[in-house]
Image (cartoon, rainbow over all chains, first blue to last red; front, top):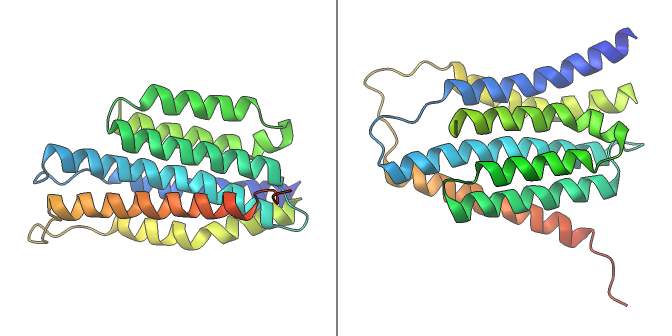
Length: 131
Length: 66
């Protein structure tokens, strides 16, 4: 029980750090409108990368806490989200959030439980940069 | 299961530490701000690199051709 609490607390802490960093980071005032979009989209990429990297690392443990099938689903969804953000520049929020919701719904329950905090926090980042 | 969760969290910690350092580093008023070109270039690099990682993972796990 205590070990499980420590494990989950460490996972949450590993999420709060990057998200806190994102929340503290505002676009410098000297940037052009295009650069502000790039600045914010970089934050989205970093948030999505955290989700992807967690799934990949979870698949590498022995035994894996994230199955290969789930890891590949996450990577595929991550890749699609990157391309959508890059292609649209702005107005990608609904598309990316919908894809993240669909990803979560289609995962096995145990793995969805593990990845849900990461997906939720990625959406927090999205709301931060694209309210 | 708990050990694996700990392993995953520990694997993410270096990235967390670097992010925390950048988050709490106070910017001096005279510290030069990144230019628009630098920010756009950083975004392009982040996008390209992350996409390449995705492609590498998907290629690595692609089923062999019959």
